[in-house]
Length: 559
Image 1 (tube, rainbow, N blue to C red):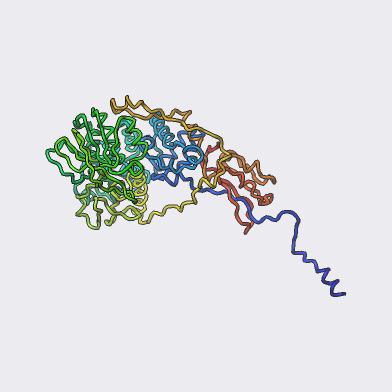
Image 2 (cartoon, one colour):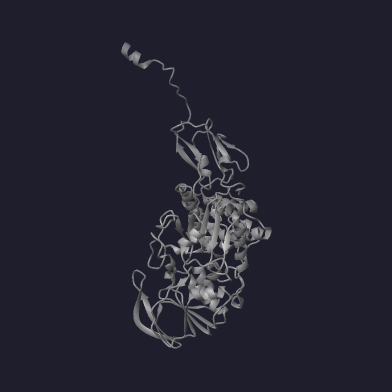
């Protein structure tokens, strides 16, 4: 009995503190995730940040944030195929944010207001040669200049711009808008030498006492295909056609033009032919619409302008003005197969839009360089070729090709060149996890229709090369920016502050976010559940920090 009494009255341990009420096992933390738009941008723009500034009406700051990564927003707002919008989480809610339209607005506003780039770092005394004044070369030169290096671009043509000048029709990219953004790059300290063709790169580097060089020679030679032809009508490639039009030397095509190919260049060539006076422009493509490489909106705009597309056909022979075409069918893998069924078409000109190759023959004597079958230059992850100090990017290397991809290559090459000149290696920052649509809480957001861009009537477009799509005004651009969901980053909506039952969320003032008072927090997770953009998560209570503070994505990023 005495033993039992002793068991019922254990000794008191004064060091063991037990309390009643909830026991916290996890606490909220603010996170900074990667928005899918940022992740998808080939130029590496911090899209969410400059959208946040634009929606607050801070347009100058938005533009300055944008051009830290891309010096030509007015160009990109017009010609980029905006993969950021394909990745935009708002597309699963109603429709994607019109990122390209806001970017164009900021670029045009910068021109209107005569904004200039902020000065870069102090001069390093190093000299870098860039060969080619296309999007990749201009981007690399701009970023190198901001890093303090003296940069010269040597360009064979009489006009800078590369394929932006000689490959993209003026109805998509007015030449004055392009020239203004190039002039701004020049004003930042980049020297562009026109009519200067480089035939031997190593002597060019030595003569100019350059410490490194970037090859941005593009891919401006049209691919050809072996088509039996006797006394054929005029046959030319789409690259040459668009180049001649860009150089104000348009060719005579006749009334009936057939374009062979199904990519974006084929659409541009057919639409250009109509503007040059062709009554009929027909695209012949060997696969169907669902397998065409052209973007859907490009094909839609072409059809609106009266372009006809003959799917599942291929050209077999050209005899005089007569084209023999064969109907194809697709196998299970989407590859075209001949059917043995033929028909005849008539044409005054045939334009081949079958892709492009790089004219890299002048580089064959450079030790260490290797090339692809299409003339592309092999580079490593650091954008450097097999020859030390010689880098390459843009359409001159293997991979997808677009203006935005080329601009991204230029920026990446500049950072690697800068590191190489300093005897280091460039290391990019690790990426945060991507904020997916499933992480968000869409019911929190209100409906907001996109701001439409006005498009000229199709019947009037083919009368000339005037721009087809108009830009947004300030009201519409700000509305479009405000449609951003701020995926994965705090925008100070106050939901966490309002939801906390313990008043553990402390406001730090506009643009400064919040902090969690861990002395009051019970770990109930209500704040996390109420966060619309997944800027908060629960973390295990392995340690007891004093507070956790949110960092708003961009100054003024308030909804």
